[in-house]
Structure formats: structure tokens, C-alpha cells
Image (cartoon, rainbow over all chains, first blue to last red; front, side, top):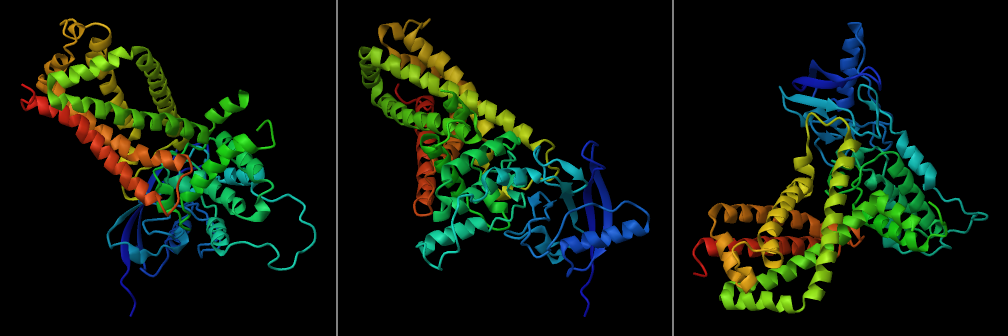
Length: 256
Length: 223
């Protein structure tokens, strides 16, 4: 048996380009509860295009929650109301018939809107370019398990590395701070032996770029952790704070 | 020195400044509350306590200067963060789900802090000024500090506003306590839940402790 379709009212942010002023547009849609949120937007775009109207621009890629490309603020929550999922993993069965849904882009000065729901998150790339890598010479391929590491520590590093860089932390933070993202990237190296040689230089450089890009400061509300699709822990922020302060004492670089 | 100023101007440096000055103020409040408990033991106990502080005035003055510095930095830095953070958001959300992802204590630090600042100004103008500089009633001049307290706490609206300010102080401290630990990097799943609980207990003790004094005098205590 086919499930009954849901009648929904969508209020979607429409903005022509980064320079123009945007506003909400209302759309009435009928959608299957089995559809995903992005499939609903695809259907909406089909009808809009048939009518000769401009489609709603939004980003998506893998649609299985691992690439970090999609990202909408749905009813005030980055990636929608459910915990630990990306927008593409949100299904319409989680909404009630007759519900009004507000769809907004990630809002941050450092994430300017390109068009409609698409935002420019290249700031994250710039932060990674500042230190999100290991550049020491490591020689040839070593034998497996030659570098001893405690299981718990490697698990913590993998938890930090689970960050998909979607920017939901920035979108949810009342200060549009990128601390959760940057701390996850700092932590995934800081926890592993290979990350040690550049540990302090990395954190100093990445924080510097983060600040220059105009992200806000963290005030420890922990909204980022609550909204993160990968459940990245704020203990990573604590680790970054520790490393950053230690870098001020230990870093080999005079100027950062 | 350049590197240090750069550190203090970085996002983490500003957090660090809030945490260091805030922690100092957390400790100050404990001492302030413990000293003021003498109010419940009558005029003799309180006047002796204040007079005892008077005899070590040079030391107290040094502490007061440090305290002033901590307050000024905490307030200045807090206002700066508030303004910068507002700017970092830009356009605000039409629908805001912050109620579900964060505590009211953490979201209202700027508001509760501002209320505490207003309270602080009136607090200094009424008690500190009269105890240390000039008392138009001449009570403090004759070491009758207790009578100054009785005078103000018998003004009903003054006492009620005082109690309201203490509730907001509790809000502010509840977030500030655990927030300082997080900023210093002392967040471990093993002990951080306990720190949050201790912070809440601390905030309740401070709010109730300071609020109990105007309530005590308003209900006719000490007469």
C-alpha cells in the first residue's frame, strides 16, 4: 500500500546572488513520507522548472551522509531536527501532515550566501591549507604496526577525523564560531604520533586563519556538539585550547 | 610582548582572558560571602569584621586594585566578544532552535552579565562608597557599618532588586564555572560532568547566600 502523501508548506530562503538581499518564498508541496528532504526539494525544483521558474539552489553530493556537502538549517536546526544525521539523511516521515517548514542557509559572515541555500564554505579549505596536513618526511612505507599506539587514543583520533567539514557547527553556534571544526582537525593529528612534529605550529596557524576569516569566538554553549551530524565532541575544543596555549610557550616559531 | 598581545586578541586568547578573570572573581565571591555571613551574627560581629579589614587596609587596597582590573578586563572583553560574535553571525535565523541545543545559562551570558554590571555599580555606590569614602549619614565614619546595611536592606525595593540581581548572578556563575574549565582545556569525560554539578552547586550557594542577606533584613531580622 502506498503511504499517504504529506501536504507541507515550505518557506525557503531565496537570494539571487551574494550581493542581493534575500527573502523567504512560500511553496506548497505534496510529498511522500518515504522521500528524503533533498528528494522533496528535487521534486519541487522539477515543478518549478516546468513552470519556467528558477529552481531552488542547494548543495548535495553523496546523499549518504559522508561528504559534508549538503547543509540546510531546517526549522532552526542545522541538518534538521534529528540528531547525528546530515540533511540528506533526513526523511519526510519525520514531519507531520500540514506542517510549515522553514528552510534557511547556514548563516555566518564567513559563509556568504552564493545563491538561495548555497553558501561559500571555502573558509574551511583555507583553514586546512594553513595546517590540516602532515608535511614531515616520513621515508618509505613502514611495516604495519611499527608505530605503537594505544587503542583508545587511535579511537579518539578517528572520532575527531569523522568530521565531514559540513559547517553545521558554525551554523548552529550563536557566535558562528568554527571552533568545533578546527578543533577536530587539530585533534586528529595531535593525538597521533605522526602529528607530533608539527603539533604546535599547526594549531597556531589554523587558529590564526580561522580568526582572520571572521568566525566568531567560542562561548562554550556546546550547541555545535548537539547539532553535529558526526557527534564530534567539544572535548576536542578543550584539547585545541590546551594545545594553543602550550604552543604559545613551546612553538618554535617566533611570529604567527 | 607582541606575541602576548596577539595571543590575547586571538579567539582562544579572548576566551582565556574571560576564564582567568572570571576564575579570580569566582574565588573573590567565596571570600566575600564567607565574610558577610557575619551579618547574621549581629552588629558586633559584622562591625568587628569590617574593622579588622580596616586594620590591614594596605593589603586590602592591593587586592582591590587587582579585583578592579579583573572586573574591567572581564567586562570590557565580554562586551567586545558580544559585539564581535553578533557581527560573525550577520543575518539572524528566522527560526532559531537554540533552545533545544544549548542551555539558557550559556546563551544569556551577555544579558545576565550586563544586569550584574548595573547591580555592581549600585552596590559599590551604596556600600563600598559609604564604607570607604563618604557616608552622608555618618554611620560608617563611626564604624557603625552594620547600620548602613540595615538602612539599605530595609528599603523594600532596594532589597527586591538586590535579590533579582542575585538570581541573574546565579545564572551567570552556573555557566561561567564550567566554561572556565573548558577554556583551560580541562574537559575530560571522566570528571567534566562532576565539574558541571559543582558549578551548579556553587552558583546556587552564591545566589542563595547573597540573596539571603536582604531577605533576612527585609523580614525583620537583626532588629
